[in-house]
Amino acid sequence: MIIKNAHVVDPVLGTDEILDIKIENSTITQVGKELPSTDSDIIDGTGLIAAPGLFDAHVHFRDPGFTYKEDIDTGAAAAARGGFTTVVMMANTKPCVDTPETLLYCTQKGEKTPIHVLATSTITKGLKGLELVDMEEMAACGAAGFTDDGIPLMDEKLLYEAMQKAVELDLPIALHEEDPLFIKAPGVNMGAVSEALSYGGASHTAEDILAARDGMMALNTGASVCIQHISSRASVEVVRMLKSLGADVHAEATPHHFTLTEEAVLKYGTNARMNPPLRTENDRMAIIGGIMDGTIDMIVTDHAPHSREEKARPMELAPSGITGLETSLGLGIKSLVEPGYISLMKLMELMSANPARFYRMRPGCIAPGEPADLVLFAEHELWTVREEDFASRSANSPFIGWELPGRVHYTICAGRIAYRA
Image (cartoon, rainbow, N blue to C red; front, top):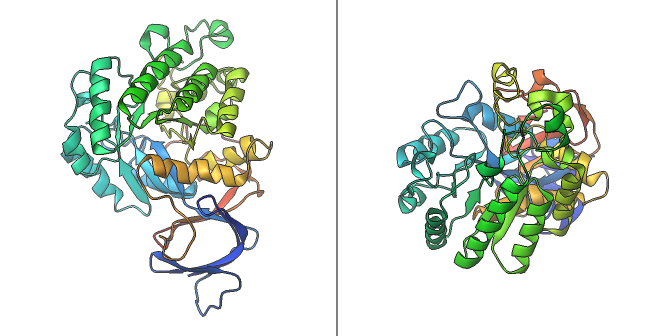
């Protein structure tokens, strides 16, 4: 296969020019201008960006246990349609990923998909926050890292021990930071909108307190820690301060948190209910500021599929979360690149290189000898988000009907076409 005349944007090597890319089997073999080719399989990359395959460090594929929402196969298809060649699955399935058997089920099923599917282990057995899993055993079985995502870890001593063990194993920990003491009702910011709905809401203090506590423990232990789906201005400041102190602390932002505010709940209803919730315009702009200066170093989707029936319930009974894999790139371009906050190169760093590094993976790049994991997209080509086009089994998204830039034309993983528009 050869890709001709593509605009290569590679944040690892800093490449930003029109080039040809030759692929043999699963490897890039040549990169250069006007490469000769006798290949019958030629992709015309004219007008397309060629970048390292996107890496989503935070997805929920609901498999095992909730496959009516999504399974590993449909989740991988959605990822490929969004330009992702690697994803990291969270561990809050049913059963949760707290044993080698469940972990191997996930990774072995993931190996049969067209993309790379990694899996995390829970930090605690049964997600109960009472007893650590056998972290050494789970690491030996291939856990990419550890997280009780969806549930905060309230036992400081237990988390401290987990961080110490994670340092020994050289694996990261990702943390969902929402102290239940400061949540009257989840999924909606405690503020003007929750008051208008007579819905208790979740205070930003719930996130801020745990981000500060856990960041300080990371500083003390040397653990590599991610504050997941950051939503609060104060939490951005906390992470900025922790980094200045030398803590190995990272933060993820989702496209919905840097695109929407709490007012979206009034327009989109339960499709704008999420944990942590959408907050104010000040919070949204603080997240963008954190992305610009490197405080927030990863963009993830927190892809959280739910059935139509579940999302049709009243706000207090509906589950939190939205699908995100198929709209993430477009929202990154629309909300961050087009307004001039960051460059396309920086977006690729946030959506590819940095998440890979956090999960101890070699970041993808476009050079001879490297794995042929690529995304080809038209940065300025507009496309409409339509429910019927989703590859995901669920379509719980507030972005249905939106017109977005950045249409993905090809996702190539291990030298094979995983998605073609």
